[in-house]
Image (tube, rainbow, N blue to C red):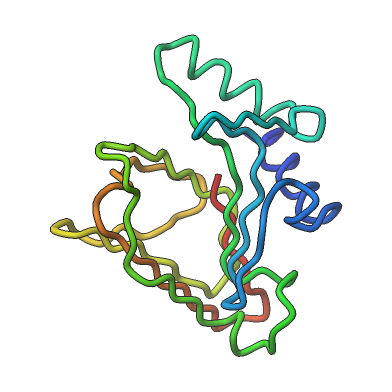
Length: 158
């Protein structure tokens, strides 16, 4: 929804990832963690992201168990690297140790002239498209490529 997109863009403008239980990597990728219930830990940032928490609550009311709600950024301007490193982000092959851990990936924003692709072991590549969502099994080996050729360098996925 527009409210959810506005909320996420406000978070990016207002907070660094570390102020929202998140982190940034040297390769231009950041994650903001809003809700998490994993490994006997629970945290919430619902005061900062009420629309996100409302959406997670609706999903749980419909039978989905939510372990985490986070915002991932490829090409984040928050990362203190030169422009070229923000324009090409590669996340190496990795997998969750939790078998069958499903992730709903919803792309909120894709800057013009950027492309971002998720590759999963044994499956066709999935392209991140603004306003589109897809599920994938995080326990399957996966990797991601991001490239920006225009003036902006951001892809935001909830």
